[in-house]
Length: 335
Image (tube, helix red, strand yellow):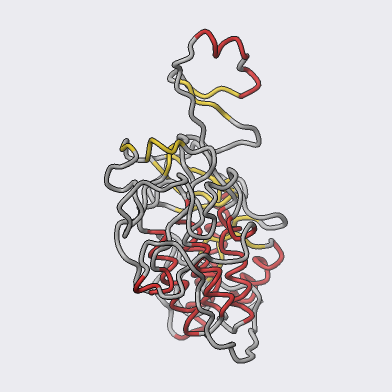
């Protein structure tokens, strides 16, 4: 599997070719040829509104860490329940901070379509969430995804192709509780297209129905945050043994972040890697899948960087502005 470029690629059994190289006549000559393309998105956009609401509610350093861990589950290599598990983590903090906006955006994240490497639908999680606010929710599919064929080589109607708590194939296929009319446009964000989460007002009695609206919790008390951007989750193999005292591990974290950023400059999409490894490749967030890096672009004005953690030994890999990243590293180093 290769990362998506700025133009669409089509996969034939013999390899990848640019769309512009395919003529109409070539299709009529072999009508049974199977075409598939990778459907991807800017995954960091999926948690942007939740993180902003979290910052506003006083979540501080937790907000960015949880958001980055969550959007990584939209990549093709994630397990079928990883997205829901991280939505549960988002919901835990949302309820702790008593933020209606955070609760709604966590519910919408749980329904965001996942990347698909070959235009098939993505299987649904087959277990109940921990938080009742997520009961009955499941991801939409992208419009370009085949509604009959699912990841893992299974067909619609087989285990994993029907949302948890339901007994029949979705109608319309590719829909979700927040977007009941069907799948959403390839590469787009559900949170930008709907105003209601589609969650049930009585989740425990309507699991899997996808109907009704979520009951809004009491308004959150006014809080302020000391930071609009917080450290992201630990990167693979980036932690170091703590030196004596907080100042000691802070300095080491800064040095480790600097070393990782230097290392990332030499990485390419063809660099060898270990499955599940996260890195930065060409300024993009990257995850190792099948021994190769699959990249996802950061949002406009940001780039992928390693940052020092501030509350424990280690580093994180996330999308941030270069200026903020430089400032965080300088602070860790005591400059």
